[in-house]
Image (cartoon, rainbow, N blue to C red; front, side, top):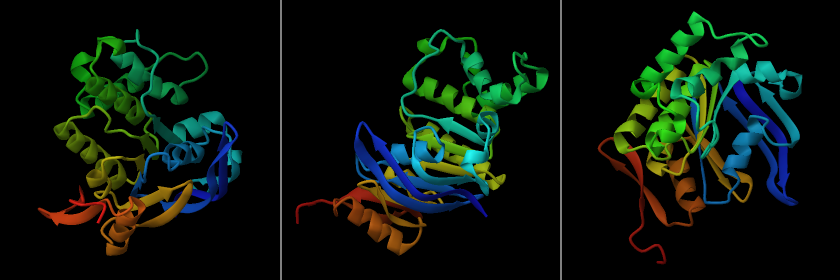
Length: 257
């Protein structure tokens, strides 16, 4: 069954067409990485799937037309981690994570014991519990990113959409992020992430390649056809290799040849 489906998806921003009639179907219980050159439309595609930007065409969430979802239902179904998010600088880290529980609380309802437990578990999973009483604005870039990831996890949504989630994370914490995504998928969830780190993108179940607002390839990350498409979408400037049992993308020594 599909988790996210788009038909004829078009988005124009500031008078410029960014997405050109996207058709795609992302299956449930898998992690899809979205990759492509700068300006390809990756972030816009992710936002359009989450219905965060005005778009033409049809989006289906978990088998149900996106137009049929209420805002609260959608907020419970989709956990969003955006790129370079700002605001709430004075909020304590644990209060930022608690924002992820708002879709589950009644109007003007206070957080309950169950909400606080979910927040604790999410912060422990991202190793951010130790600075729960620090203001978000006082945290380093990597610490901040882990708090924002905890906020997304606290939603406990089946769909986890992330735009450049590895920003500011060092390699060990990137590995932790990878483990979190795999646990989410192993539990029946679906993850979609825009990644510039091509080596990490190749660890996903599937790779969705975007260029000039169009999908140029969608296939299993381990498929040789996907590797060739990845090399082509970056103009032959990278090459996919097997290293220590994993696929990695390395710059070509002479990209001009």
